[in-house]
Image (cartoon, rainbow, N blue to C red; front, side):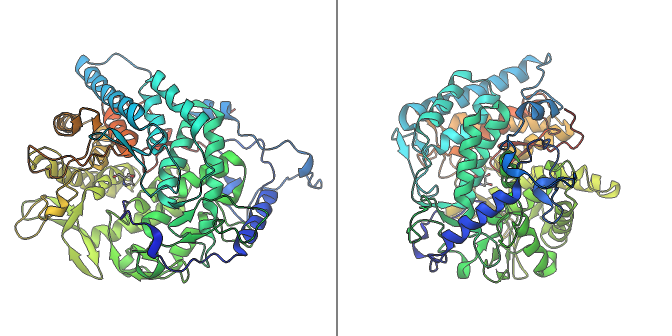
Length: 571
Ligand code: DMJ
């Protein structure tokens, strides 16, 4: 999702009582004790972190001797042997045009990185027109969002020197000792996702330890009556001496969110990363409900499965206090989007074992098809938004990820639904392509509409901008991998040419304010997701399928690859 960037100043009263930090610390200690050291857990085995009640205990009958065991250590080499394809592929012979296009995208990544490094290293994003850095208010004092978001893309593209520069910044300058209000969602998808992915790709401990340390700082957000986390978390140090530390363990709902609610796409987009935090730490606290506490992402589903869904749909706003919906706005674009994505990807990441996630995904997609999917007069399939039963015939750029998601799930949708879902995915991707093709720049607007005679075009001035978003090329990448229809590569190449023509400026890439003019003004911002996602998906579109193979990896919603949990793992 992508949310209004307002500070949480006008948020509801702070909910964490002064005693909360102490309670939380106790829960963390209890959870760590309960976790024990599952020292020889293969990456394939998730019992340790998933089934609360069914947690594996030593079957020897001998008294537990946990204190004497070696501390938990994730076996990286065993994990690497469990992969079915080389991470960066086998590089077979290929046609020169595909190679040249891939190299062009690599050059774009180098240009984006070099300019960030020169003018903004250590800030969160580059301002490419004014040649300086931007910090913003999403990351609670954390810096280097572009470094962390770029790491795995640099690695995959074999930009070795640049990867070493980024790694060095993480080792020497990435400071987690900050005190500020952060978006739980953004820190999770960009920082935790980027660090985890880079650890799994490289085995370099620094990325793992930073991910785990940062992950612990996010846990207090779960300390609510339902265990549904709040959207804003203070990352300040939890001072173990003072129970009245003003920053420890405090979380808020966004000031703009109805009645102190939490956002579906925010609390629904933690699962992949938090399961890996448990996997790598040996501590179940991230994943499951730990004893009497409500920490852990597994609990989120329980709350969602309890609450009644209007027409089977999931509204975007839920109260973390009562566990009830606060408003009936449903969207597969902003505010809802990656919740659906993480259901199907949780199932895939579990090596198709997490049937609860699959059922939730199947049911949600059925309701979406029934109530939100429409065809325009001109024959374009789109996904409308729903406001308490009234349809808004608008599709956001953010919703364009859904072509790829539906294609990814199609292969596993019973025989009779398979082709239907592939067709649906292709139709939605085609509509999103139309939103690009109908603009003068060949880049798509932030939102496009199907009303008042309009088809796949923005009708409001405020919706004409393009900020280097990835969702459309993301769907091209999945559609290419799953169909090998050459039109997806062709469409991706059109985007490359448009980015070069309209977004490339002297010192980086910039978003544009109006896609319907060939002389657009620039917004002076090179978003970190341009390096994490847009350029990575474009590059993968021109790679062989075994580069970050979909057999081995699922991409988090910021395009950071996390490994599938192969249960047939053999050491
Ligand atoms: C990214 O941060 C993620 O893809 C998120 O899920 C949605 N918004 C941006 C890109 O548009």
